[in-house]
Structure formats: C-alpha cells, structure tokens
Length: 231
Image (cartoon, rainbow, N blue to C red):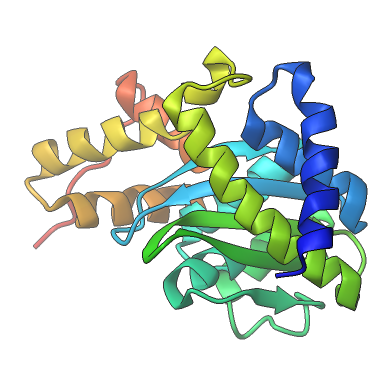
C-alpha cells in the first residue's frame, strides 16, 4: 500500500475529525469529497448476514444499503462474502447478476457501485460501499485511494466501537435493531428458525416495495402480523 497515499488520506481524515461526528462518519464524508462519488457507506456485516449501518453519507446511500439487506444481494454482500473488491461501473449492464437489487435500485438514480471488504487480520468486519449516479469505472488513483480508505474505515469502525473520540452517541445506535427484534418475534410466533424469519421479513418488504426497517418497526409495534403459510 502506497505509504504517501495513506499519509495524505490520513491527514485529510484527521483534519475533518474535530467535527465530532464519529470516525466512521468522517470517513464516508471524505470518500465522497475525494473519490468523485455521490454516496458512501460503512456497513458492519457477519457471516450469518446480520448487518448494521455504521455510517452513510446521506439518506439516498442509506436506502441503497438497506435495499441490499432486504434482497440479500448486491456488491456489498458479494464483497464481504468473497473478501475482494466488487467494482460495477454499470449496474444496468449487470442486471442478471443481482436482479432483485437492480430492479429496485436503478429507479433511485444509482448507476455504478463499488464495494470493498473491511478486514482486521483474518477477520472480516464489513464493507465500504461507494455509489455513483453516472456510469463509469473508478480511475486508477480513485481505486488506489478507495483501497486505502477501506483500510482506514476498518480503523474508524474499531475506534467508534471502542468509544474513543470523536465518536458520538448516535454512532452506537443500531440502525437495524428493529429488524433484529422483529426477526426474533417472528421466529417465536411462527415457530421457525431465525434465518427463515428474516427471509419472510425480507420477502414481505420486497414484495410490497417497503423499506425493511419500516416493516420491522410495524411488527415490533404489533401493527403488522405475518402469518405462517399454509402447510
């Protein structure tokens, strides 16, 4: 990894840090400013596909990350599973790769996506995702910067998790807490596994064109009931 490139990006990151918004939030803001993309997000992921949104540059980006969680596919999911970058310069051309994602994401205006795994040693922690409204690949310099920033994002995530400054209280709130609670409720009520409960939650959200978090919240508040399918 280019030491001078890393030093430059770390300096820029440190200069932005006094804003007090949490290191993860500072990283995604820097990504948008430096890499010519419209959106960036840091998402924590696990092998069982549980995830949480650590930081997003805006609501548009957060919605794209949530959509990947809802349909269970996309560049972020693939980057985490393979351990390598997933670079998609034209989502429309890759429709067959992730049909559930592209059918729902393209109307929002996204045209290209780039996802990078975040790792600490052999442990995979999540992904740094970048989104553009125009098609086109990352330049050689942008790609090199993105790889460094994915590494810095890992440090940011671990720093925020430890409670070190400048992390804010909001950085520790679980974006998908309602999804986790709703999944547990469904598993108990329908007497199915947590995996099956999450699958039904996702299916309902996707088929009704609703955010997964909105469906989960309705279940937690007992405003929505998903009955078991007939045998």
